[in-house]
Amino acid sequence: MMGIHTYFRSLNELERIIRCPGKFKFEEHSVSAHSWKVVQYAKTLADIEERNGVSIDWKKLYEITSSHDYGEIFIGDIKTPVKHSSKELRLLIQQVEEGMIDYFIEENIPEDFKAIFRKQLREGKDDSVEGLILEVADKMDQVYEAFAELQRGNTEKEFIVMYRNALVKIKNIRLKCVDYFLENILPDMVKEETPSSIDIKKITEEALASP
Image 1 (cartoon, rainbow, N blue to C red):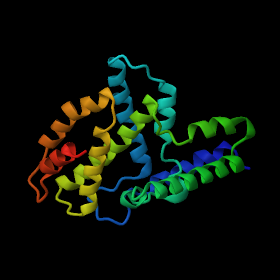
Image 2 (image 1 turned 60 degrees about the vertical axis):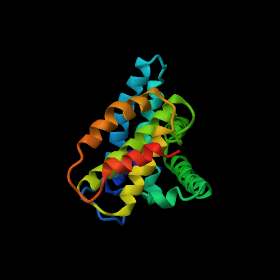
Image 3 (image 1 turned 90 degrees about the horizontal axis):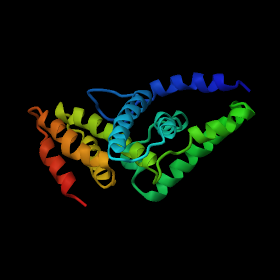
């Protein structure tokens, strides 16, 4: 057993796992960079919720947002359309990921820290306000990554699908911070649109109008 050092050392691997593999991208993003951005989005989203009288468990929020993609060390970043092509496949992928995390903890983490690591590295997306904020923050980064590609004229259809699906997912989550994002942040983003072969404004409007 190598102890917690093994966990710390493994974090370097997240810097080498590139998101949305196999597609042309103007900007490549690692899983570690994505995780850092998700924490920043979630922090501000939680502040908006608090301003609207919602109680936030900040420790839980930081735990689940900072570690939400740790399992990709073992399975890599599976393309979003594949990962979400069916509920059954998504569940199987999640089960494999969770199983490998459990095995990693059992083999490498000291006994007195195992319960802590299981709690911190668990799947954090659930119906709690913190879990929903994580879901929104995760999808927001997809929106921003896809938007940057579309803005530059990247015609890979996967980025249009990613942008649209992430917006649809966000708008269907009932949180005050989602209302704020849709009413105040997204319009500013769309105003940034630069001349390209892709009509981002139209794609945005269609996503917001869909069920």
